[in-house]
Image (cartoon, rainbow, N blue to C red; front, side):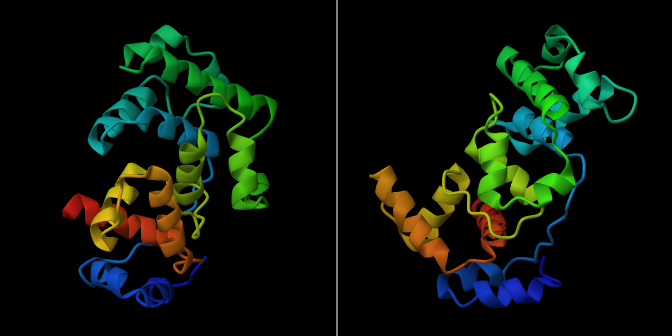
Length: 203
């Protein structure tokens, strides 16, 4: 982990177009969070929802329990109960899948911490309902990995199309160009994503 934002800002600023984004924004500091299964559940709940709506769902979920629930408590919660807080049937089942996987295979922070990014993605996407994007969000916001680039994220695509004047008529070519541009941001691509999201929201 970088000791101060200055090191990543200095590196990303070498890209002149990106330097303009950084000029008007405060820096970020990534955090590591230990209860991986709980953050994965939260990520599934927030899929295809705005941040505000996702927060409402998360609060309703936690209200079902006294304190933070264990994987066993989540698994023992009926699908109907999970649906009663506004979740779809498929999301309720995916949440059960995460809890079961945590019980049967483990989702220990220290164990995952020894895996590289691709190994974590491969491990977690074995769970039905956890796709590549969801695993990337976990790498960024739970494991605190600094060099993750979410090429499939719509917000990242929209921001880069605007900043780098990219052609989005061919999705495959768009992603290839995004990966080419983002390569020079390594090893701080997570921070680049954070600033691109903020740029999109503020634009």
